[in-house]
Image 1: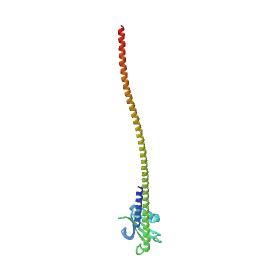
Image 2: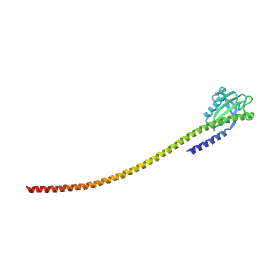
Image 3: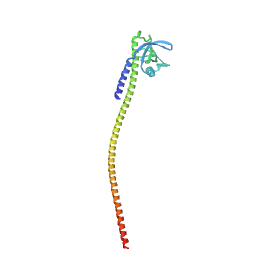
Image 4: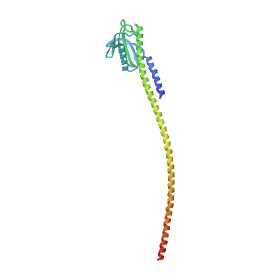
Length: 235
């Protein structure tokens, strides 16, 4: 059981690592409130609500009051994201379900240009790294949860193993008790057989004693008749 759990954990770790490596950032256009906008998208192979909650939490923790959420459309005005630009930028972002997981998309207005793979390659690369870092963070968190669950399962397996060993010890004790009881019963049977033999012998002796007692009665009757006969002759 322990080897199976460890093997499952290793396979899970390799799978999650593979997910993190296969989180490409692509340039895609999305309509926000009817207006098409070009932006970046990273796909995370995790639950939609979990990803959106994590994304909203990260934006809120970093930019606080500047974050606006209008029915799932996140807007940041005049914020500085050091990893992307040293000057204030405007960000519009959205999280949507995707065929292979959850897509985190954003459009970045750098002030003098929109983020683009061709026109702003340096900022594009920095923004790409930002989204990839976010994806890796989620995978690490997911892996940490899986590790906790695996540890709990392993502990439960170890406890079950200990219980099975303890059960085996109890069975062995019961076997020894059964053997002792068998010996005791065998001794009792031997004692019972001896008692039965003794009783049978007593029955045989008693039958002989009864026969002797009957013979005494006959002899006593004969003697009594002889005495009576003599008394009659004296008269």
